[in-house]
Amino acid sequence: MKTIKLFALLLLVTITFNAQESENLYESGDIKLGIAALPLLDLGNGYSGIAAKPSISFYISERFAISTAAFALFPQDIEQDNGRDAEVQAYGFIPSWRLHAINSGKFSFYLESGLGIGAIRYKANDPADIAIEDNSGGILLLSAGAGINYKFAKCIELEFGVPYMYGLNITNAEDTKLFSGVAFNLGMNLVFNTRDIKKIKKKHQERLKKKWEDKE
Image (tube, rainbow, N blue to C red):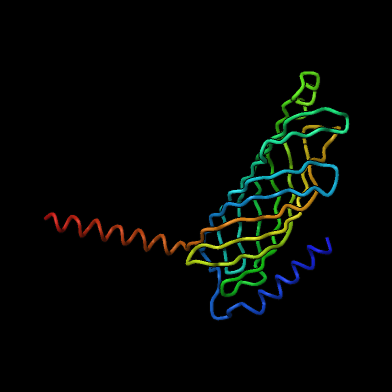
């Protein structure tokens, strides 16, 4: 954890010295579409693996955004303490908020927190372990963390985040904990403003109008 804290501090210092105060990375009305991969590094006795996370965000202001992200944990084989072996798959969504402490130039530094729900499915690899499938059902996810965004093209950016995630199985009363650890967020985002949509719509209308005029 000390290494993660040191790395986050170095990233913050880098952003501070490289930011351009004359330009904001985000503006009110921005919409962000993203896709990310989350390698899950378990810090306890839960599960690890890789999850995919598509997301959509809307910026209420230059620094504050609300977001909804879906997630899907790729199927993986796990063996529980009782020796039961099964394939596990999970999916769901996490509504969250994001505050950009730094929003300047091509960089941003953000803090994020969210609460989500989903479902988990167990498929026994051995017929003798069929009872494990009774644990399939609902899950609850809590997340909180920080990260950075770097804009390298007009409307495309890279994202690196370090959220801490805690997952609970709300169906199984005996073994509720699913995951407790760091989930490194590595992704790419497409960012555009609602006014850009209006401009595209206006240009399209103008092209159609010109097309009909030429026909006449």
